[in-house]
Amino acid sequence: MRVLLVCLVVIGVFIFVKAIWVGIATRHNGDFESEKVDIMARRDFLIEKEITSPQKLIEEMPAIVGSQFQGEWALYSCSMLSAALVNTTLIYDEDRGANIARIDSLIQMVMSRELRAYDRERWGEDPLETLDGKESHVSYLSHLAWMIGGYKRIGGGDKYDELYHRLCETMNRRILESPNMNLPTYPGECVYVPDMLVAIVALTVYSQQYDGKYYSTVCQWIDEAKHHWLDKDTGMLASFLPDDREGMYGEAPIKGSYSALSCYYLTFIDEEFARDQYERLKANFLQKRPITGFKEYHDRRCWLGMDIDAGPVVCNLSPTGTAFAVGSVTYFEDWALRKKLLKTGELAGTTWRRKGKSHYLLADVALVGEAIMLAMRTAVEWK
Image 1 (spheres, rainbow, N blue to C red):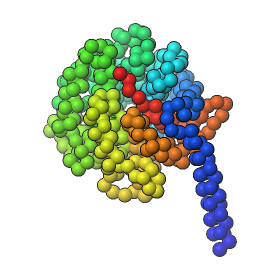
Image 2 (image 1 turned 30 degrees about the vertical axis):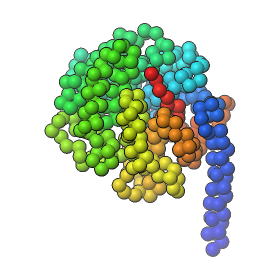
Image 3 (image 1 turned 90 degrees about the horizontal axis):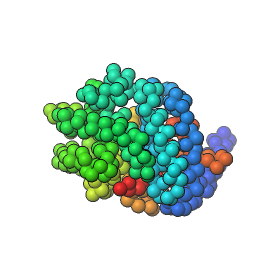
Image 4 (image 1 turned 30 degrees about the horizontal axis):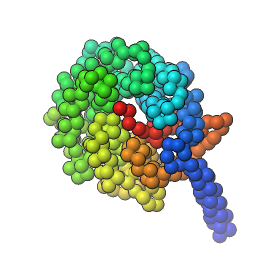
């Protein structure tokens, strides 16, 4: 009985201390101006951790996930920090020159042979040395193109223009030559729609910078999506698609993590469609009790489990789905919900501040999560 009492007291003290910690850590959350100090402190932490040698960045990714995911996570870390640097430049209108130089460094990291090795190993050829070829490489190429688009959006010069033109021409050609306007991330696998959406985002940004070039492809892809790739139960964009017209995707699950990320990418492409998908995301995946967040499964409960895409699912909530959802929540200025989601993030992540820099303790395990969260909580229009 005494042991049980002691355990209950310890749990009670922990909950009390955690509640105070969350309250203090999130007291300034509300909008971009009130959060500026925290946003910049997290930005500076990521700059310090990511702008390094390519190999060192890859080694920051947990070895337990294997070399492919180490490479993917390193790519995503660079891509999301790059997006966050564009966002903070547009929001606060400062550090423009420094942020251009930082994105330049991130682009160089992504272009390195070390970082693109994961894609080269899966496809059996180098993504940048085979731009005239037919293999997809869509995930690697699209993130690199999107980063160059962001670099130019805040005033970067013509340093990468030749590569930028070739990347977008290659993606556009391969999309139009594919059976259903979709390209697989890796050979022999289905199309992961959020990965494909990055290519459409990159072409959208490019078209805004070059008099609408390739915009017809963007419009055609979105039209196909609206008419053929929506789940009949939720009305949401499919999470997976076959890489041919004959394949079936109707039985593939609609996942919270994929849907939330797709909603974010759609804000760059078609704001009306993005808002429709955002409202459906909230209707099908938002959970307000006992903790506010987004579920991984809309059609079943999972109080405790593990999902390859979402990570540990606790109280139905998807860690990655909730983080990605912050992007569209922020873009559509749903400030009340955003404040609750940031509290959930603090509850799960726990902010650590040191020497003017901030990060969630989880960043020591998964740096990519910190970069994603910063990009999502600063999501703004790039036009």
